[in-house]
Image 1 (cartoon, rainbow, N blue to C red):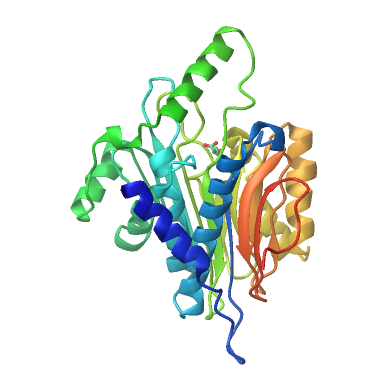
Image 2 (image 1 turned 45 degrees about the vertical axis):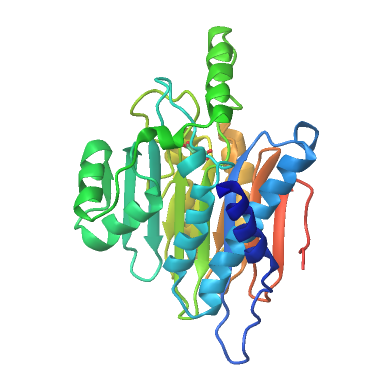
Length: 336
Ligand code: ASP
């Protein structure tokens, strides 16, 4: 029944036409990702691929509807990420991966481009929508990042429900952990051990950018490991003076190469968004050996979504209202 209702909700969201901009309105745009990784056409069955496309399209349209209604980029980012967190398909919220202890530890962050305000949480185990807690840290605490038990105590103080960690169990992710353990025992690298972190970047009518990222991290990660997703400048960054970015990939590289900030620093120094994002993902990171991708947007609503992996789940609604959904490397164009 619940699945049926979810499908109905997704179907009704997908069926709603993208609102066109009234003339004179400032442009709005949104881009989301559902993670980069070893995502190949030949490994995907048709039903699973269709489910990913429907979930991405529903999330990007839902975020865009908020922008078209005049709401802030922060609200749009949260709306899109909440839908992806609640889907078992993505490695965030409900679909989070397991760590080496067989536990789900979730990370998230958010940044506002207007004032560089930011909030982040790491290693939370009982928060259904970590992006909501990151936003609460940004808006209702004097801090930028809270971790573990302290973050959960803050969630309770904010009136957020602390849920049974069993909520995050999915058989699919449990099997991924067993596979990763086997690979580790066999001495093979964990190159396929990251997938499907989620993120969103949006531009609202007031010209404000925002970016957010939410993840379960990497399968079989060591207990307490924190990746790039909750680290401002690495996995998430937003500044109206340059750009906004949400990243996905092998977090240790994204932290050391300060990927999100590096892209925006290049834009601030005069590079076009597409060139800056391409340079960092396809040159700097490739030379370093770091796999992954980003979504990025500048204050004009230009969008870039480069990745150096086989695929990246991604979707956007540009300033012209065109909707794009993509999974594999070779895809381009808009779906309507
Ligand atoms: N970047 C995330 C991390 O390292 C994983 C991912 O994007 O899939 O935790």
